[in-house]
Length: 183
Picture 1 (cartoon, helix red, strand yellow):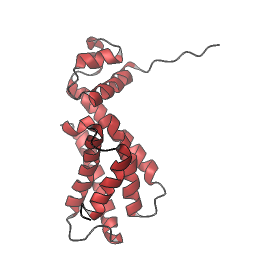
Picture 2 (spheres, rainbow, N blue to C red):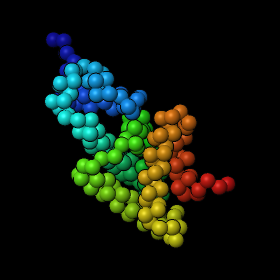
Picture 3 (spheres, one colour):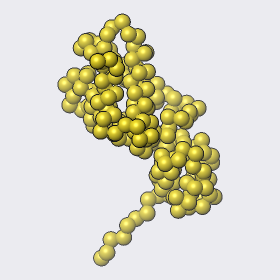
Picture 4 (cartoon, one colour):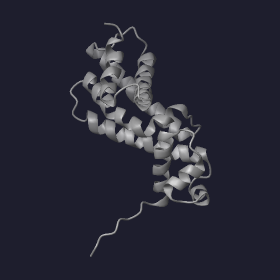
């Protein structure tokens, strides 16, 4: 018996189409997204009442993917520096899909709380980096956390703009974080 390809659930197809469309054109219309998903606007609106709702679902999926790739990448890391390096190497490829989120802001309290938890995890990593001597103790923890977060978004946007090869982005971000831009 021939196996037929199953079409992904409509909601998933819309999210995937939106990610693809918005990665190419952050201003893509809901009509263009619906067309790319192979559904009508009415179907799109049955699943997502607004662009904000769709972006919230995309952001949630992005966070799920970020958590999964980071957990996988750092599983057997032997030091905080190694965890930071592996985290950056794992996150940079996700920018192909999610770089457009850098210009989006969400008022969703669940997403904000999840982002805060991620920043707290980074803060603990910074504390460990300090203990290892990789980060100076006189640099405020919040500054380092914000710098790590910003380097990920910067790498994503620079790769997306064609200004930086994806293969160079993680190393450059790590260098910038640990040694600055000096010689």
